[in-house]
Length: 417
Image (cartoon, rainbow, N blue to C red; front, side):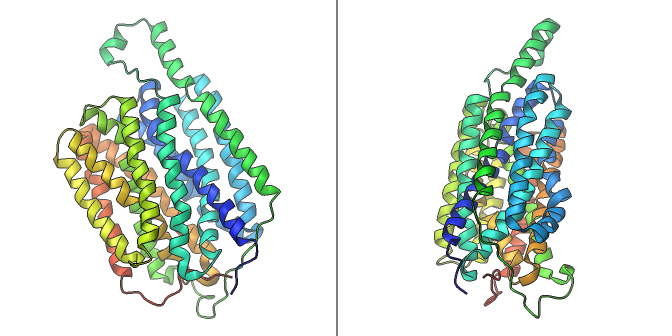
């Protein structure tokens, strides 16, 4: 069927949302070392920054899907943006009180908004066009998520990280007042950046509210309209793969700065630049992957990339110094296509059940709440380098999902009108 006349503009507008949530989530690798210092946390405790962000996807993905089923994609997007803005504004009082619990609460509210945005925008971008181009279209939109991933640590490193890390010995030699002043200054560094983020998100919400968007109804397929989603084996396997992939992605990025410090001997501001460079590779990987999918079937490319990433993580664990850091930087490039490709392969052919199926795949993002904590525990018990075995094993699960999809042919990726 032909696209709605304003679908090209709609695709552009929805693509901008991928940038917004990518920017928010990719500030976490900056917040983790920053709040670890400001709130005096262990590795495992600081990993709860990711948990607060990603647990929302598990809690709200299905309610978000049900909300959109009743009020449409646009309604879900507006609610998501409003929650996003409220959470960003809560960073101001959280920093004023220097309460880690308050910070986690603010991050959870932001993530609730992101859950609505992702539950709406990911399937919306896939059905807003020709079905055979769904994987390419979502990878293109996710490329702007990659752009945000590049800019977030770069700007966060400039405006949030102070570059001043005091050792336990130095802190113990200071008076309680000087220690409190130092920690308060560190915490306050997030206030202005998050006020700006909240303001920008509100402006986008207003723009979307005033802009008509085509509401798309998934195709009612006779052989798909009935039955439980639990019978959709590929969807369930995709949920598992996404769970492990997001866990791997968050582990790789969130612990990168501390890995670079401890293994590569790179100070935190410089490490943030290394991370920004790695995420530039992530963004480039999205564009390059979108192009390669014209010649290589998405499942085959996914299998190739997940195999390479398993090898790169092994190198990061086994090598020493900056070579280990460079190996991790390479992992970012080959992670680039994984989330959108797993997503599009998981929900293909679901027809009338696309929104509900999308909710399940979005729920799987909770992997980002679990695996970083596991890696944090491993790091506290051993070393940060050994902890990277955790994401390495996750990539093997992605490889299995890709392998199961390689021989699936002539199946519409997503029903579209």
